[in-house]
Length: 345
Image 1 (spheres, helix red, strand yellow):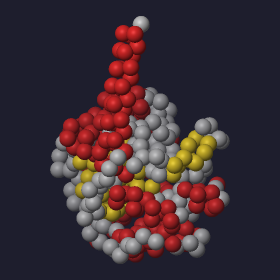
Image 2: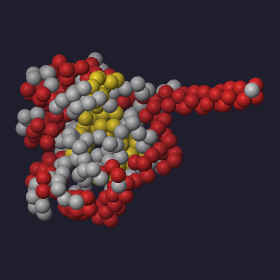
Image 3: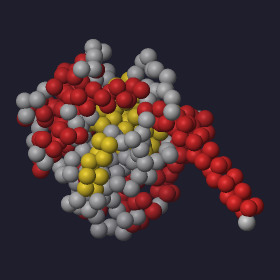
């Protein structure tokens, strides 16, 4: 009996020691300070229009008022191919042309899950197709996009899907159950354009990033500090992330050491995460998870992670706050950030 007790105690000590080492690695210490940080924004035409904004005016303000030089474009499949085999690229052409004129570099999101709710954007005509037919149509669409734009040097990276390994959003039933389809998409893009590295994005908080690193050339991660955690469709609560800034740095080191891949932040939360779409949520509730103070806190937090590239999520909301709500504080703070004049308040 005493022998068993000793063995149990030894095992417990070993387990606790291992847990302590893991905790210290991921939560204790500071990341190195990056002297040259690249700041960019995510932009969705769909999101701008859903807020009642003139999307061209919004996009132009981002480039001309901010002087932003890095934009990640979320382009929806259902917007481009509203009818099977008929592609509408006029709006995308315009966005890329404006970027080229101002020397802006673009990350272009390909695929069916391209970001913004409901995350997967399946055209109506494709919604009732079989699993195999949907996969074939997604690959056709992806091929059409890459062939159209692969000679446009405004685009610096393709991002294949948006958080394809993280189960979030309303997507086809097969989407998260076929790990080979993402690889097929990446292989297709590489076969059409070998000149650009491919980004695979993943949840910064709820993933180890290993699977993304196996598939992509660059790992793009999210960084969300205050979110609405759904229990049911109507019930939930505000949740504050407990992760230390150094957590991201230490995870990024592992990815670099094991896979030789770099990690960048392609979604830094700078808009509210509310229980419903903004149009259905009072402004007071929105401001609980994003306001000028929280904007500054998230910028400081990002700098403390040791990463050197961040795309800020929420630029459409900043413009909406400025234009529709007469609250330009965050827009003005962001202008300073992108013009290297930023001093946190």
